[in-house]
Amino acid sequence: MSAEHGFSDEQAAARRLLRGVRRRWLTIVGCTFLTAFAAAFLSSRQPEKFEAITALQVRRDDVRALFFNGSGSFDSAPEREAATNAALLTLPTVLRAAAGRLTGVTPEQIKKRITVEPSTDSDVLTLRAVGDSPEDATALARAVTQSFTRARRDAVEGSVNRAVTGAQREFRSLPESVQDSAEGRQLLSRIRDVRVAGAVAGGGVQVVQPPQANELPVSPSPAKAGFLGLIGGAILGGGVALFGASRDRRLRDPDEFGELWQLPVLGHVPPTGARGGASADTVAEAFGLVHESSLRRNGAAGPRSVVVTGAARGDGASTVARGLAAAAAEAGERALLIEADLRGNGNGGAGAGGTSPTLADRLGDAALDAPTNAVVARPGVSYDLIESGRSEHARALLSGPRLQELLQQTSGYDVVVIDTPPAGDVADALLVARHADATLVVARPGRTTTDQYAALRDHFAGSDRAVLGTVLNAWRPLS
Image 1 (tube, helix red, strand yellow):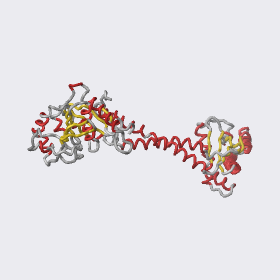
Image 2 (spheres, one colour; image 1 turned 135 degrees about the horizontal axis):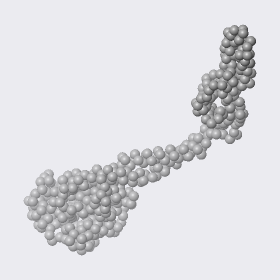
Image 3 (cartoon, helix red, strand yellow; image 1 turned 45 degrees about the vertical axis):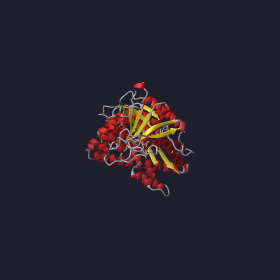
Image 4 (cartoon, one colour; image 1 turned 60 degrees about the horizontal axis):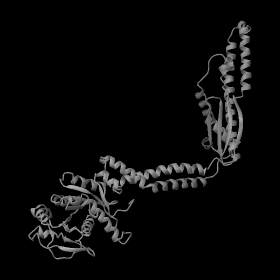
């Protein structure tokens, strides 16, 4: 696998975030259905509510229009008039009057239980009242309707009486000659007409549809609550998945490694161990593929000496180094493994158990061409080993000339694998890489973080030695 296209760190982070969200699809699905089930269950536990609907036609009662027989312009915007009529239904005086017609209900409770829907293209108001039973809802709608009708009638009667009183006062102020004239008689006729029209109007409210309650409850609605819970749960699950993905800095997908550092992935080494680990033959086959894709991809002209390093401890660089040396030996090549962790943080050697001088000894006063230890990887497969030893002057030894001399004396080997400490921790790998033909990077999906891998990339940015690619250790598909 190879990364053919380069990405900036920001682009790589965005793509990694999307993959992280997709990997958490179970979280999204779980939140979605759990929230939907909880919403439906809680809704089903709520008491039933019933709704009664009544329609009222509210005619305009402008006393001036009545008095002047419709002359003049008193029109207002339909939207404003509809909103005004709807607001009149919920006036405190109407609610108090309605509460007086019922038992055990306050005006505040009535206001919460009714809904008024005005119409902008007609003078009809729709009143919806909610109750614990169809009878309760019907009684509430009827009480509000009757209270509103009475309040409107009282208001119109008051307006008519004030208008008539004012007109009578105006008539009495006229001279007797004018009172007996056609103008005076016309004024008296208007006064009588206003009284009659006001009485006939009856407040201008007509019940178009009496209160009717549906026998089926309007709530609870578990299906509706479940649907809304489904939407809310999906949003919640997506948010949880997004938060988790944004907080997770670990690299998991091979493409993520390639996007962050444009290196080919040269192989996938399966995990070992008693719990779900791959067999020895499977692991050996994986290292054989790594050997072919890294050291022999150009045939005999491939790199002879290769540094193996990781981004952080625990990535498995030493495991890959030993496996690569064994794979070279199994391919019929003479292989040498040099453990270059002079700081004493290694794994204690590859298991040779010999007494030959260590690398620390050879870089010090011991002979560079001293014998090496032999490691038997498998029956019939062995390679030579120079164990690391330990020194308090690791940097000075690795920077000195004797390391280059030592590598020159290994010309009799077909492959020299140098196992170094993580390049993200110390500079030892960079010091050794100066004298090797190439470097092989080891990462562990699910453990190596973006910061560690990016730092490793930056460390090798100025190196003049080739970085062959990345080996994913302890790889599990979808790990």
